[in-house]
Length: 192
Image (tube, rainbow, N blue to C red; front, side, top):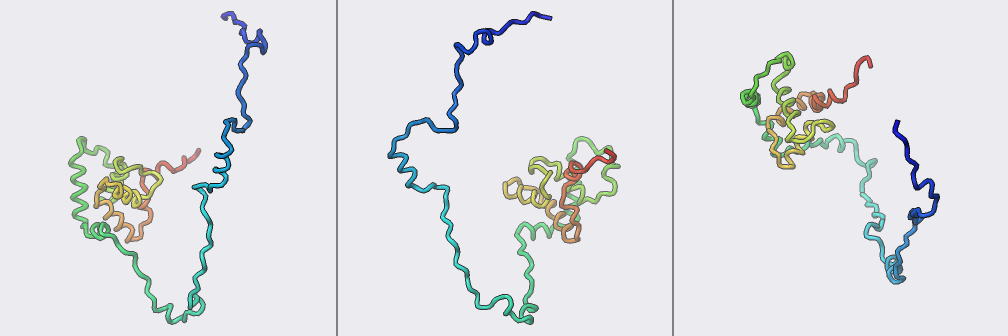
């Protein structure tokens, strides 16, 4: 074991030590009185005046509307965007063509077909979209929201993915909205 040296700081005591600076949470910079007064008089730019909005008085309240009039009103369907209407026009054959184009572009052919057995072409397209990192992270965000985010950022996500998502949503499949990778990452270990 090497011999230890004694520190010169310990033996010299407090003499020659630099004291630490402590301002005790006070500002020590001198400010002229005129600047202090100006700061106190001027309101902060972050502060907003809270002005109560006047209550709008409707001639007919909810209780006064006749029941027959309520039954006659129709619920309006949500307005579809141009992209959604374009995606609804994509046929199943076009989605198949899109997937076969992806498979033919791969350098190595799929050797483990057992992992994709039982999956529809739509699910394969969605899983490929999940692992395509150029459209942003897939974990913690629904597929539809991720597709629209990528579209808004100008990343040109495939319209076929939106077509599959809209078809699955129309058929009532809510599980399709969550990425497969997200399910794997959020699953708990069995027997742990």
